[in-house]
Every structure is written in C-alpha cells, then in structure tokens.
Length: 295
Image (tube, rainbow, N blue to C red; front, top):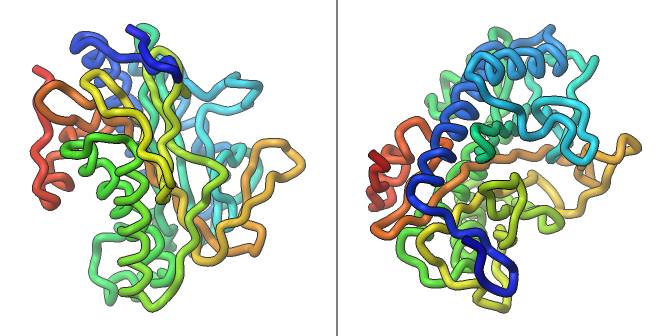
C-alpha cells in the first residue's frame, strides 16, 4: 500500500515478516564481517566474506549494482563517512571501520550498518571497560565516537514507539549526540547531507529520516512504516565531500566518522528492529521500550 504526498509505502504484517528475514541475513552478514576483520586484510576481503554469507542464505545483495555501486558492502575507514568502495586498502590496527550492508529476500530489503575500532587481533568490543580497550591499543576518543553514534541510533529508534511525527527521531538523535559530547567534553558533528530513509520493496524510499532537529514535524507515524535510522557522526565538523570515485563520502576536515543503522518497523502495537537478532529487545529495554513479536 502506498499513501501520502511522499508516496510512503505501508507494509502489511506479512510483508514486514519478509523484511525480517532479509534483516536477519544482514545481521548475520555484518556479524561475519566483524568477526573476520583484522589488520592485514583488505576491504575487498571483507566484501568477499559478505558476498559468501548473503549467497549462502539464499538472498541477494541490495548494494551490488545499485546505481552502479560495484560491491556487496560499503567499507568506510577513518575519515570516510559512508559509501566506501571495497578494494585494495589494507586494514591496520587503530582503524575506525564502518560496514554498511543490505540484502533482499523475495523482493524485500533489509539495511544495517555497524562501526568498530580495529585492534591488533581484530574488531574491538566497544562495550568493554576503557582500561581493557586501552590495553588492546584502542584510541578511546574513537571508541567514544562509536559508542555515541550507536547510542544516538537507539535513542532515535526508541522514539518511534511513542512519537506521533517522524521528525521526533531527529530530535532524539541530536539530543543523544549532544549529551554524549557533553560527557566527553567534545563537540561531535552530525552529518546532514545524508539521512535515514524508508525501506521496503526498494532499499531507499520516502520518507527521509533526519538525524537532527528540523523546523517541521514530518509525516505522521503510522503502522506499516518501515524506516532505516542511521546517524553519521564525526569527531569534528559536519561538512563532507565526495572522492573522485563518485561514491566515498569523507569529512572535509579529516576527522574520523562512525555510522550505525538499523531497519525498524512501526506496527499496530509497537515497534520491532528488523535487522537486530533480538528485535531490539536488549537495547530498547534499557530505554523502556519492549519490541513487539512478529510470530
């Protein structure tokens, strides 16, 4: 069903279940890539792992061939914000890596992204105590950025459970980023040129989902809306540029960036995170939200 000036696609419960299947393939793929990432591998190596995982699940990559994109995942490193093309770049300890992945099952899409700091032995768990992370060689400022970006994403997702209008998501994301910055004694940048989006029978659909406060209220949240919430936060300014490959988005000031994303469905009786293995139960529970069950 498609309604509204922006032609928002509203999904039936059965269609959301199809999206859940695609979302779980994305979750498994990101987990496989994260588990394999280590210094010495190239970003093309990570792309090959993603391709095998998606194929083994009987799914199709959302990104490969999309508007000419030449790879299965986006691999963005350090000052690269989004849309990094996998290739010959060799990963090194201390890199801040963001992986964006999409998959299709029976015509329905899932889309999610993670960020992590790479240690000598592989991706570091940013939920570990700071002392353990320092011992593993992590830059705590990068770890704080990863944490802040993920927390801002969850704040935006949780808002979908009670908000009436979509732009409440951007308000929640920006407030969470500000709070994290105050705690760290820094000012994070929120990238504004790129935003979240609707998702369903196409990877990118209306409506846009801002990661910052806006003057309008946005469309009314309704059952059947499926939305990709994806803040992109930097350790410096918010300005970006695109490299000569016409894809890779980098920070103008060279500051490092992090990117987190989950696809989420608004249902009649609540919300569910389609690309989280537990439906969002753990992280939403901390914020007082219980996701609905699809089965």
